[in-house]
Image 1: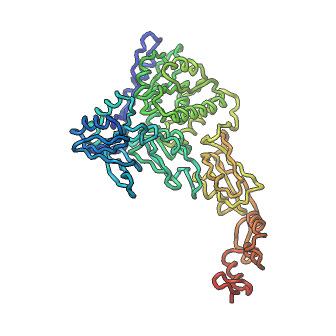
Image 2 (image 1 turned 90 degrees about the vertical axis):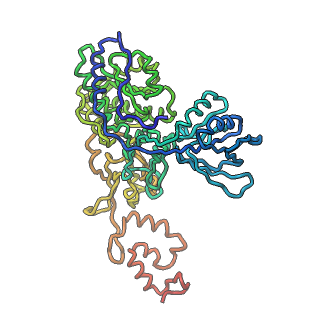
Length: 565
């Protein structure tokens, strides 16, 4: 089991003889290989002393204990209907599993004996699950947990060989970084964005109130959380986007320096180091294909896709051979669709992105190389700030767009990471709950200098999380996914303003007239507000309200039930 890996990602070496002028490609790949190693990422440690839990109810349990008994300290949870086998020196437990959680070196088991009123706890380093259905149902179970179905004899033999190798101290990269201050997950128990939680195939991410929490021991480094995160709160570290940008600049810049008039526009091809690399190595590649290895293809997000096109690539192909969870493929396709939508609106015709198997690579490259390429490659560096990188890329592509006039706005698919906030002025009472809940400071009040209560909006900051719409008590807010191409997106825009309402007692600012009028209209028929002066007090500040109650001889005390003296 390999948990620690070098952070230098290199291009795949493939036989390209007889495929045209290879000089630009070979020079580009040599430039990539010659890059200095990137700054190391933080690591996550595991420690296992070999405490093994075997779960099952067939003869393989005995075989596993017999094969591993002298190498690991084994215990058994017997789940079969037949009596358990005799396993001298091995504890065999009869009962039901209540829960099993954890990871390599730190699995926690709760189980209950038959008929027992309470559960018992135990700790293990490794788990071999031989049941009909696995305990861990996620697409990628935690490291240290191996599940083998009954009809998989080869996998069973492989598991018996692998388990003894999982004893000792191990490290792996901490694949992610999280900036909770810009996380748009939730505010005041109103859920906004949960994309990272929904897509994580290891269940490493969970809600932590207004933010999320990631268990680095469960994280397998797919990077999908960073790909779907609209705010950039979650970022990928293996490599960082800035480091990926260095790779792309080296590849594309060197290719450009060595190309001749007959050279085709370059196409970047990302693949994983497992089945993707193996499949790609068997496929002949054109001279304009520049392959780059990724730890996991789900980490290739829109910032990398548009960044590559801004640097002069005709497009990007991501190779998938089926080892990735289906949700990851869907996420990459959504990112590609957004990228092609933006490029098409800016006049860059054709399909610039594709997700496919290696067998379809030649066809996809042929389609992509026919797309319109940016006339002047960008000089900016990709940043670890996702939204900043995308803004640089889009602005560069718009500046060099092959059309006479760039559209003012580009309509995007629902749940896109950019967009507008629409306010129904008839419903909005200017309570400003939306501004208070907005995690990105896209919505705000008018500030201390405003003469009237105001609601303002900066579209550049909006991540379309929907917390504002969920918070609004009047359901006055809807979202409009779009990419605004004018400078207005960076400026404060007035969405609504209304007349202020001052306390009828002292004149202190109390709220908005529309808010007070709405409140009076809703409470006028309520039994609690039928007494003389009760509605009038709703138009007072807290201090004036107390004074009025104390001076009213007909006011009843909630403590004594008698008039206030």
